[in-house]
Length: 364
Image 1 (tube, rainbow, N blue to C red):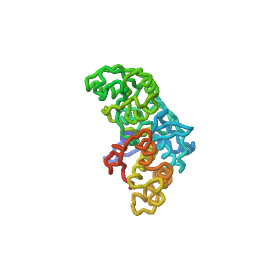
Image 2: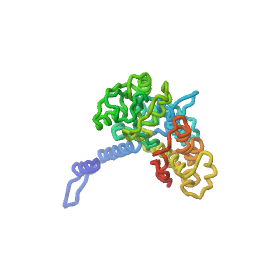
Image 3: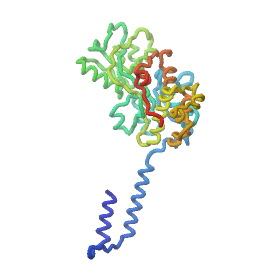
Image 4: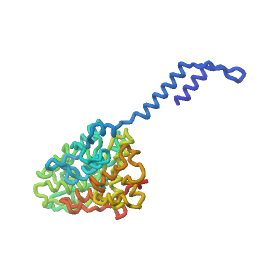
């Protein structure tokens, strides 16, 4: 549109027709100004994206927003952060620095998490966050993928005598403000024509405490969170998780939507961990797998190709992720799997080749 308008002005102001052959007095200064304006505008378009990767490299540390304390996903003990989301942050650091320890973990509440990311307090949000249309389109944010497929359920005391969520009519439910949990509860009860009393608290920690004190009958949350938080109750064995799943809760890491280069690196960090499990590459076998004849394995491990260079990191980026953190299955088993206190089966979080939903694009 700008070029068309400028050309029209050029024809109108600088040319006069004579015998069908225009004689033009070119307005050099004005036309030159237009060209300069266009060049500056194009430069602004091509350089306007935030340089998150450069900022992280200059700082020498990745700033990662995590849950304040959720067993299996992000929890601090003895000065050490652990969890599925924590592992993902360390994987990004491994890809960038070749050092998985170069991460600063910043615990964030559900209410503050998105503002913290938008305002640049963190480089990435890895905080058991549900991917929804509103969050993905209206808040200047982008989800890079799904690192845990979840669903919301309900926890109650065994003494309540309830075995199904459909028996919760008239109950009191504790929920945190500004969460999908609160909306899902409202939708579930409306669809099933039930009523309830709502006790709204500021964050998940307050919800758990209120439920543990008996201030409400029901504690709703993602199933993974219920497994984790039950361990923190005064008497964990007195509580059950009801079988109904009230929603889809695809959990995934989030970045700002103004930096496609950073988006690609974070997304392919997740894909690298998933593909590594599919290809049978573990933290213990990565070195020997470099001798594989499988082209995808060789590209992922940096033996062939230059995938890392295209993302602004070394070609050994995925090799570093796998050897320093592990593949997706290793991280799952270490943090939330059947042999942990949470005891969560792989279920739908198994690889697509084993009946689950975990799937990553090929390494070509």
